[in-house]
Amino acid sequence: MGGPVEHVFVGGVKAATLSRAEFTRLIVEDCLERRAAGKTAPPALLFDSNGHGISMAARDPAYAGALKAADAVHADGGWIVLASRLVAGASIPDRSATTDMIHDLAAAGLGHELSHFLLGATEEVNAGCAERLRQLYPGIHIAGRHHGYFTADEEASVIAAIGAVAPDLLWIGLGKPREQLFAVRHRDALRASWAITCGGGFNYVTGHYRRAPRWMQRSHLEWLFRAVTTPKLLWRYATTSPHAIWLAATRIDRRRVPPPPTAKQ
Image 1 (cartoon, one colour):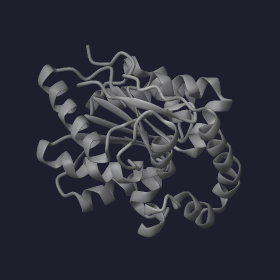
Image 2 (cartoon, rainbow, N blue to C red):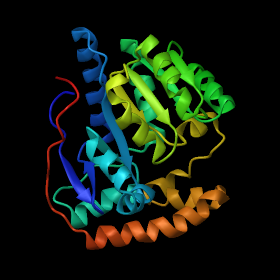
Image 3 (cartoon, helix red, strand yellow):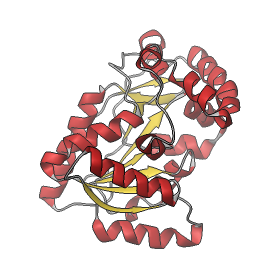
């Protein structure tokens, strides 16, 4: 990866102080540098931080370890931006929602012919996401795709499929903590420039899940909209959101730290 990415801590989990636009620029430039150098492995790892993840990291050592291994962690939860200004050593400029970053990178990559691999969701949603991206961004290079319902015994064939096309951007939508653990466990074997976890992001591209109104996004209330419109998430948010806020208020850490050793040598 290119230059250092500064992180602060919110609720015990690191979050990069880059803006959403800066993330897009960094990723595109790094992909082009890797391409020029002929390097496709191992990828830089980009994970996200939100209330669910912060709560999970406090309870799941394996997941917490995976977050520490990431080259960068972006603020997917809007309230993390606000918390960074109150309890961390530096402010995060704005929210970098995964559901937005998919579109940012799809658009920014067009002029550079960046390739994408979609891993995750059901076959229907995965195929629908690829088709929708092609409609929205004519000329986008979807190098490959695979649904997320594969077994441990099938992981080798999935990794081989990714390696056969060596995408610039590997989107991993397997849900927490599976997607982060998958990326860390197979990092050395994944032939891609960047591996970016995206949870249920493919479902938002297809319209199976709905985004909150803009005013709720600006007010950091998108989690509430998701809880109301997706009942299966209600219990998760009802338990993890208060826990995450409590962690942010009690685990105050004002360090400003560089990333771990980068994947690109």
